[in-house]
Image 1 (cartoon, rainbow, N blue to C red):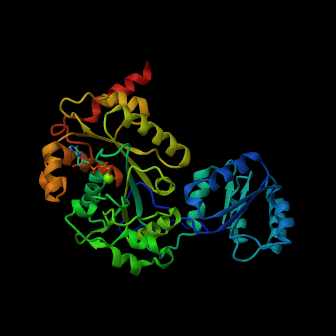
Image 2 (image 1 turned 90 degrees about the horizontal axis):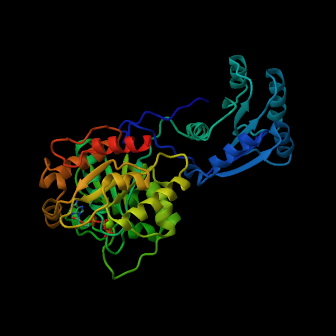
Image 3 (image 1 turned 30 degrees about the vertical axis):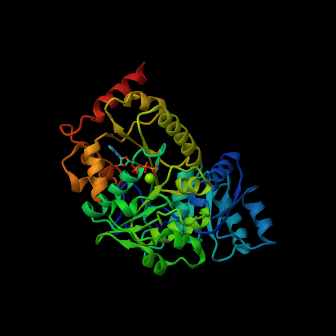
Length: 422
Ligand SMILES: Nc1ncnc2c1ncn2[C@@H]1O[C@H](COP(=O)(O)OP(=O)(O)OP(=O)(O)O)[C@@H](O)[C@H]1O
Ligand SMILES: [Mg+2]
């Protein structure tokens, strides 16, 4: 018990360790509706999507009744409101019907170190004092299944545009490139835009093998196949390319895609997923499952509406995760009327992490040369903003250089604070 996730050798984010929960059976026998509600909420969390969760009432005695007839699950949570001695007696009875492999979590009312020690000695994986919370249970169960010798799984960041053509792919590719080059983190950029994906073009690579082959036979997906389908871009950066052709149609099955991404993240610490602006079961599922979601938007009305809808959707489907990261891109385009950044932020309820100015020359040159923004001009405001975003995503905080950017976030933040006080 009390295992904590290993300190990864080359951890992608300093903010939090990625938690994965395998295909386990998790049963809970609660006494109060409060605990039952928390376990129900845990069952709905993205990290439990592979687990099977059953919630019952009746506490330890109900569990003893049930497991006289059936095998105990991988993880069993029992709640009790009894005293220290009574808990030990009840657990002794539970032990009679409990498989030795079952990990038992006890939730009680007594905050007592002697009880904690006795329970640990009796083989209980964890004792928690009520009230419990979702995050606590998720971390605890993830910890029970994290092998201290295993390589940590990679952090998945999904990028999606609030509408077509906002620059989501460009930003995703530049972030993947920067993280691999400047932080020395092995990174894979996965392009999910099967027919029109631009990762190959942006990195000057015409390999057509990649994600489509992996999706064809998800049962065959393993590290050897993924390795074969990856296009090596630099020492630290590989691409899982989309075919980028309309010759064939690729149907994406959401669980096949999850299998592929799970395999990719087993092999590298950072995975950038370029999700096209398509609302389909597989794109929704990929956003729901990612560790971080970046929404790229332009300062226009349609983009604002869609950003608001995406944020609302993500807050509902990912209640235990931090809110999506917002990037406002192509700001200050000549002659285009715009929604001011502060108004955009107020309407969607999230302040953009970075505001990137429209720079046709910089982005156009990168585009036509198959280069990254940093390679075209590392000192440009666009490069500085992208750098700040890469720092934010990996937990390495760095503020945008105020001199080089016309779009410093400081005045915007001040303005928003002021609005809140009114
Ligand atoms: N800040 C910017 N200033 C000027 N041009 C930009 C900027 N950001 C992106 N672009 C350009 O906008 C175009 C669209 O970019 P990109 O393909 O990355 O968008 P997308 O959101 O992925 O689009 P799609 O919906 O096709 O997937 C590209 O030509 C890119 O170079
Ligand atoms: Mg794109």
